[in-house]
Image (tube, rainbow, N blue to C red; front, side, top):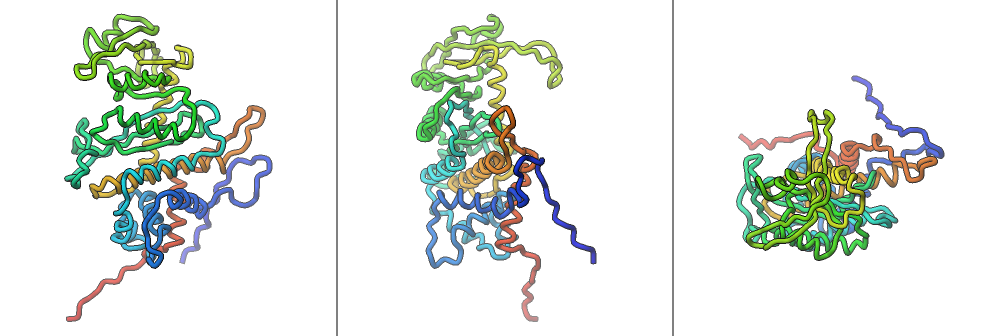
Length: 400
């Protein structure tokens, strides 16, 4: 019989006052995750029920950490509730109430003192492929898009994300309704932003939001924003403006047959690739700007940081449990849990695995110590210790 291999301990770089005990353990990660969910998402469970919210959420977290289904998570854990019990506990959840609860949970993961200074934030849409037929009354949540992964129908989720080094939190995430349009999505996310009480320095949007209605909504509220201009048209539009004008800010009129016209300021900037991404030469880009709080020379680099929200999507996608259900509430809950885990990961690195930076102020974060997949591994191990694992099968044999 081979000897058991010792558990590998990961130690962070030596810093003044480093303690001998662990800075973070797997049970602590699970406790933080359960506290974030149980404290805000209310499950209607009877006191006499065999399984409470803790067991239900543990199954959901295990499914998230493994990127698997509720059915498979319940089958892998010895003392977990049956999959039907979990689904039954989640069935009464109302989507609108669930959105409020999960966004409150996201707000609670922010560190104390966060947002004292005006923040740069990005807004983005994420489309998740949808297959099957919707339940009655849920057709409004199906969005059409460019075909990919065998479908042109998607569930859409809009999120608001902070562009800040080492504190890249998702502030809010909502399910998109087809009937509300992009302006409706903006209005709801802006309402959540106002409730947080933070001050906006600049809002960054991708070219998918380029429309007269969105631009009018932003300008009416006098918000500082940058919106990437799509290269449409031959002589007119953004493409024509880039061809006619040099670097600078130019007045441009955006037309729409349904929404009318609106005049905006368009900044044209040039970028020398210098061999990056296999590109050479200089290319021009256009951005619709209003009250841009930085120098025009910084516009390209500032907007490029917006792509952090897409990196954030790729990270929390690793913690999105799978489901074949077409229930909008359940699918939104699984997305919300993934985003909560991403915020928890960012918070743990900042609050637990960092130390004061000598001479320069701020904090130094030990990013390599807690990769996102390592946090998910901690989560798996802690849940397996609490609920046990299935390690044997017994086949029922009928009598001859």
